[in-house]
Amino acid sequence: MQNTGARLGVVMDPIETIKPAKDSTFAMLLEAQSRGWALLYMQQADLRVRDGTALARVRTLAVRDEPGDWFSLGATREMPLGALDVILMRKDPPFDMEYIY
View 1 (cartoon, helix red, strand yellow):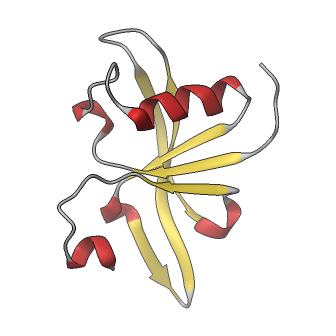
View 2 (cartoon, rainbow, N blue to C red; view 1 turned 30 degrees about the horizontal axis):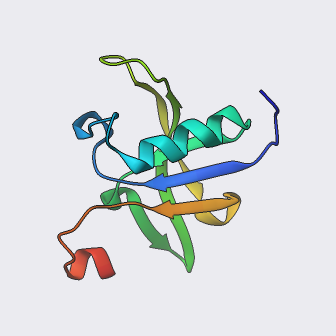
């Protein structure tokens, strides 16, 4: 595994509710991790703006292609979204005002 030092944030539905065998976000996370990217997980409710800075409560994420044990999460911490190299917005609909905000 090469270590790029890149950080990938992913905003998604609760990871424990996905079906890894069918989930395209999970496939992207597996590939990014295999390329040495650090994965940071967040849900829509973890996003906020304070004093003009976009922030999120994030957890480090490790993924595995193993049914029944496909992920593990680290401790929660707050960080500016600007510290991430890439952010994927992978929240499934409903497409409502909370989603737009």
